[in-house]
Amino acid sequence: MAEWKVSLPAKLINGGVAGLVGVTCVFPIDLAKTRLQNQQGAQVYKGMLDCLAKTVRSEGYFGCYRGAAVNLTLVTPEKAIKLAANDVFRQKLSKDGHLPLWGEVLAGCGAGTCQVVVTTPMEMLKIQLQDAGRLAVCLCPPAAQRSVPSPAQAAAPDPAPSLVAPRPAQPPPRPSATGITMELLKTRGLAGLYRGAGATLMRDVPFSMIYFPLFANLNALGRRGAGPGCQGDAQDRAPFLQSFTAGCTAGSVAAVAVTPLDVIKTRLQTLQKGEGEDSYRGIVDCTRRIMRREGPSAFLKGATCRALVIAPLFGIAQGVYFLGIGETVLGFLG
Image 1: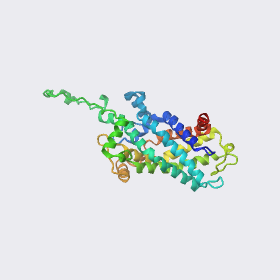
Image 2: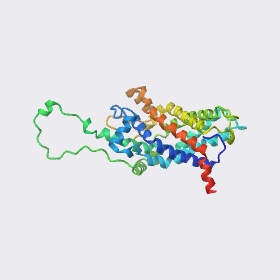
Image 3: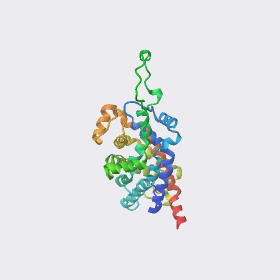
Image 4: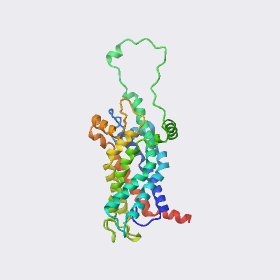
């Protein structure tokens, strides 16, 4: 969120461009985050780099971008709503150019609430597509992971040949966003696309309440005529590097802080489970089962990935706002 006055159409363009550029840059890390958070019991991946390496080896480079089309399609309205809503709330809550801390937190809360309308179905579809590769490994492990017969078993006489040819183990067919959407609408109605909406709200509202006030205060440091809570004008805005760093720092802090909530949301929104993996009846049931079966550390799965995803996403967003891409586009159209 930039602190200087920007028209609402320009804010929407800036938010959309920032989302498209940011998602393209960091989507593979987001895919690793989803797969790491969904691991229960058997550890297919040892960490982010191991996950990315195995994904490239088994699915090719573009396997790291599974679900990217959904994200790129919906991230424009999602980021536009988030950034623009926060700016509108800040302007409405400010008095004489000053916004108290409670106003900054409330504005972030409002922004996080507004974006859930788009975020929930986007995350719902993206998670199914991202996790498909992990499920393929869980349900159909490669030959190196299959059990090897013991010497006694190898020496035993061969059983009588079966008249029915054994079915080769095959991974489940790759899902598509359209197929998932149609199936959910057919079986569960519109509510199917909003599965986990409560958990999404529970994650996004605290994130925005942490991110936006923290960014505003970091961005105001050392700026002449602009202290925390001040709106300032075009002459008061921070240098590009300061704005970019403030976005990255605030994004990474907020991302790590709400990682436990993101783990719960990811587990609830994952429709297909591997063998022996838990299904959950709701937020409380999910929290209890994770704590009992995997321990407290499971709530921090993917924390590093989240920081590496969110920091550049919001750093890029601040850069786009600083460069005034939305204003430039409107200038050409006008």
